[in-house]
Image (cartoon, rainbow, N blue to C red; front, side):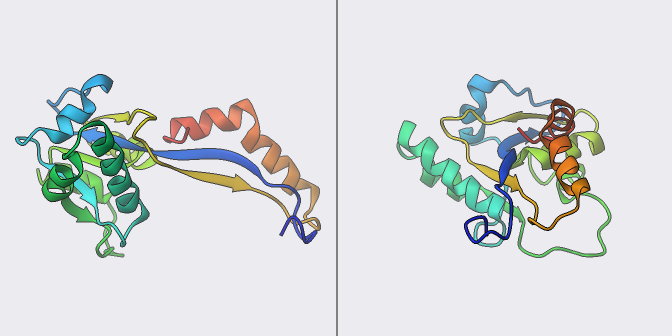
Length: 175
């Protein structure tokens, strides 16, 4: 679109990485996250691959972990309880991740950090951490305007890219 002269140049404004959410009582430590998800006593919740991009990214994370710890992909993909992404109940008003923890269906859950930030507000005592960069995957979000857009559109983009805009995005789990 940019090369065709339809839009102005796009700017990346955020990334949404994978995080690990943990039910109250499970301590999360960055250096021990992989040990935790590999622990046979820990019930690992995920989204379903091919049904939800977060599930696809999670299986890619499993592959990256496997490069560091051979056999991890098999262990993780077999123990993963696929709890979201299969079907979305349009009538459900609560976050599916909050329900998973409230119903004690998983001890930990891998999802986007934006989901983790929102779920932590809904589930008292829930903790979350971003996976280390060497195993993480993230979506990249960019924004652009039409060359015919009103000046307000450019001001909106300037706000998103400003320190204040980035602070707001970070508050909601984007990086």
